[in-house]
Amino acid sequence: MTFNFKSVIELLDHFKDEQTCREFYEQQRWGGSPVCPHCGSTKAPYKTNRGFKCSEKLCAKKFTVTVGTIFEQSHIPLRTWFAAIYLITAHKKGISSVQLSKDLNISQKTAWFLLHRTREMLRNKKPVMLNNNVEIDETYIGGREKNKHANKKTPKDYRTTAEKIKSNAGRSLTDKAVVLGLVERDGKVIAKLVPDARAKHLIPIIEKHVAKGSNMLTDEWYAYGQLHLKGYSHKTIQHNLKIYVQGEVHTNTIENFWSVLKRGLYGIYHYTSKKHLDRYLDEFCARYNTRDLTGAERFEKFLQESESRLSWKDLVNAA
Ligand SMILES: [Zn+2]
Image 1: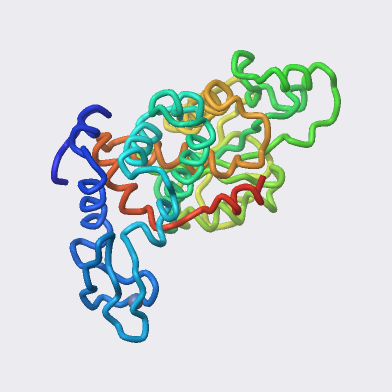
Image 2: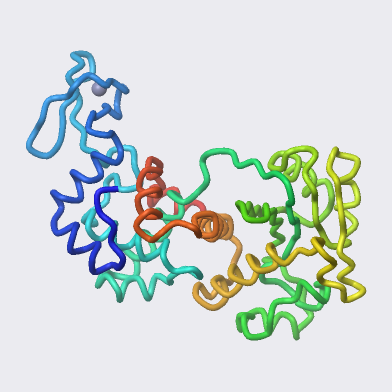
């Protein structure tokens, strides 16, 4: 870390122009030795006016530091990108495209695109394995309230208008989403969209992400009854008896994560449809998993993981 900014003003003071941003990003991405994104050559490339030219005769292609990253083919200056990444990762409950467009004086469409590409960057690319005391819980996002267990209902204040109408009208709801959450106490969280809360969907995800022998802490949902057969120690808390903490046995850590997630989804993003829910989950998990870092450290960490790209076409096709 070459500097340690504490606000978006300090960040923009430091990244005063495109050249500064570009050189910083070259250092972050390549550590001073450019790698050709076309052929992977590490042979020192030629300098050009706008970037580099590969020095391998068979390749000889031009490139800049943004090729193959979330910044590729974007008209938005890196300076704006950097400020956006800082703001998006600093706000615990997220930031809406409306707010981001006002903060950075860009169109809402541009802000929306920045948000989506940033979420792509926040996706965990390395497999995460949880250990020790792991709380597991599932929650419902959107959907009819009357079908949920008492402790899974969305707080009334955070229901969208559409949800209020649907919960009253009693119509079937196709856009209800079930999310499985796993959190290691004092460690990382993983949240995954699942088709429903049956064991056949929950257990494989748990086995993939939690080391055998870990202590699993859940409520009494029947699907978790299989955990002791899968090589885990398992304790349940009887939420149906209105017991929420019994010594070390509770699911408060994951409940707190659900609370931040729902405040963000309903309060900031006005969540209405599950088509982008997996990306929102990535965003909230990434922030939770870097909660002990400073804003500047978090910015630098995510910038180093920006080598993935979501094109406008991919986004629209997913919509
Ligand atoms: Zn090359």
